[in-house]
Length: 236
Ligand code: TIU
Image (tube, rainbow, N blue to C red; front, side, top):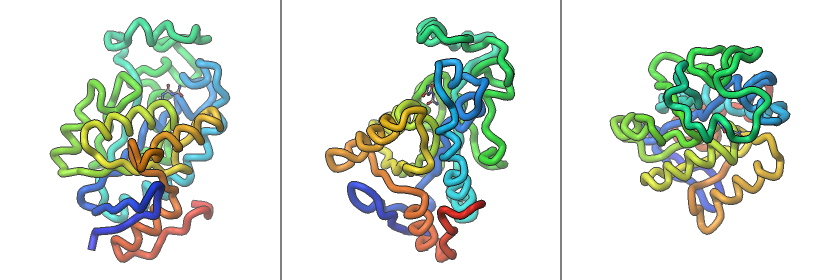
C-alpha cells in the first residue's frame, strides 16, 4: 500500500505516497485574476483560470490520500527590503510591485491579491512558503521542510508554467528531487509557452522531470491508496 505509478512522459512515474509531496505553486490572485501583478505586466490573465478546477481535484485527492501538501507564494515584505531593483523596474509595468491596486499592494505579503485563491486555499498542516523569486527553493526553507518530511518526489501544480513552475522544477531537479508536472494543473498566459515549457521538462529522457495530467495522476494515486479514482474532467 502507498506505492503507485502514474502514466507519464517520457515514461511512468513511480512514487510512494509517504515520500511524495504535492507542491501548489503561486496560485495567487495576483497572477490569476485581473487587477494583479500578472495583468500589470501586460498579460490577459484568463488562460490561468483553466488550471484551477483540475488542481482542486488533485489537491482534494492528495489530502484524502494523506500526501504532504506545500504551497508557495511569490511576493515581498511590505517594506520591499527583499525586492531587487531589477525586478522592480523590469518590463516598464503599468503599476509597480508595492503600488496600491484593486486587490491591495501588488505582490506584497499580507495584501489580498498576494494570497492564494479561495478554492485552493491551504488548510492546517500545509506549510506556505513565501518566496521573493520565481524559484521556490531560492531564499526559502522549502528544501529543509521537504527533507525533514523525507520527501523525495514532487507533484507540481501552479502558475505560470514557464516561469515559476519551470524554475522550481529545475531547482528541484538540481537538488535531487524527482518532479512530476500535471499539464492541466499548470497554466501560462501564452499557449505556445505552455506547450514548450512542458516539452522542455520531459525532453531528453526527462531532463528535468516528468509530465502527466490530472486524470492519469488521480488514477495512479487511487491505485496506490486503494481508493476509488476521483472522476477527472467532471465538475467539482
Ligand atoms: N509573469 C509570469 O508569468 N509569472 C510570474 O511572474 N510569476 C510566477 O510564475 N509565479
